[in-house]
Every structure is written in C-alpha cells, then in structure tokens.
Image 1 (spheres, rainbow, N blue to C red):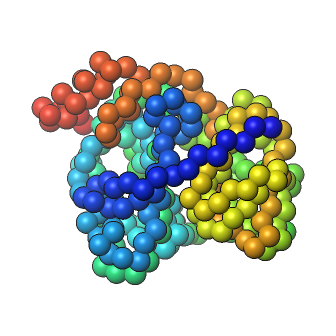
Image 2 (spheres, one colour):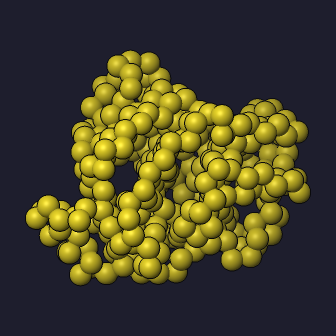
Length: 275
C-alpha cells in the first residue's frame, strides 16, 4: 500500500488569520475534498481579525472547533456560534455571503475548516447551513483511543460509528481520532475511496510509516491500515469517494469550468450571486 505524505504549509486568509493549509486544487488529489485549514494559536493577533463577509459558490464547508469559537452570519439571516467540541456545516450552493468572526478576544483558538467539492449537478442548488452541538458529537471510547465522528461512517477495529452529517459530497466521512499512548487500531480503506489522515498533535505511524504533526497522509489503495502511536496523537480522519469531475478554482469559488468561474465573479460583482 502506497502512503503519500503531504506537508501542510503556513498561510493567511480572511483579514489576516494565520493558518496551516493543505489543498489539492492543482491536481484534485484530495477529491472529494478540496482543502483543510487549521487554526492553532493562543495569540489573538493570529486570529482576532477573523473572516469578514465574503462569498462562496460550488462548495460545502465543515468547521470543527476543538478550543475557542467562531460565529457565523450570512445573507440569509442565519446566525450561530460554534465552540469547543462543536461543528458547523454550510453548503454554499449557487451562492452565499457569510462572515466567521471569533467569539473570544484572547486564549487558545484551535479549529479546522474543511472544503468539500459539490458535484456539478448540485453546484447551483439552494444554500444551506446548520450547527452541530456537542450533544450530537459524543466521544466513542476505543482501546487506548477515542473517536468523534462528525459526518459519514468510520469503521475501526471492525466496529462502525456514524456521525450526524450523512449527506456530504462523495459519501464523505469526517472524524476526530485521539490516540492514547501505545494505541494500535485497525482501519480498512474500502475500494474506490480516498483516505486522508491529518495529524494535529503528537506523532503516529501508518503501517509503520511515521506521520508527524501538521502532516497529512493520502491513501487511495484499498486495504488495511494499522494506526499506532507510542506516545499519543490527535488526528483528523477523512474518507470519501472521488467525484472525478474537473475543478476550476478562483478564491472562494469552485466550479467545473473557467467560464463558470468567470460567471461567478460577474454575479458577485453585480450583486446577483445569491439570486
């Protein structure tokens, strides 16, 4: 089994929020996922400016907060905060304009935003949004580990666990896996799915191959993956069926052709993106 290691890289977005980013826009290599951003800082200068109002078209986002919190507001009148242990899902569809601003002025902020590609048939659907509270995101105890499934289904050591979001593009699954010292778990990657694993804390091994913090592993071959950690680790598990559709990307817009991107830009500039 081939395990590709993809490093994250420092970047900034919004009004200067500092992040670590992994993306697959050039070769669509993360399909059906597009990008993963991580915020991890206790310096308010790194996150305090937030993400003022901005548009999206053609994607879904999934925000998951481990520490701290952000508040979402959009042009539809939706407003809601996502805080430690909670998640927030948004489908931009044909167009949404929203902001994401921090709910705190200081302290640790640690969270993730995942972009998922909408299939061509759904890119112009109505936008949608929902908060997923802690009561819907329990931790499941495993041998020397804990698992929180946010979306889809994850099977570890032959036991399946489901999350509240069950209609993500590409039948995607998203989970937080925390390994305790001497953890050793068995994960099977079914045929036809892309498996991604991002380490946000500590270090682990996949079939004996070391994956350090702020690195992502990509596996496209079916088979069993042995996940182990001698000292403990925190990681995100992502799994999905590739859409295998062309990707055209410009800033907050992800479509299938450059002509569709140009139309999205014109629609935003003329105030008709959300019509």
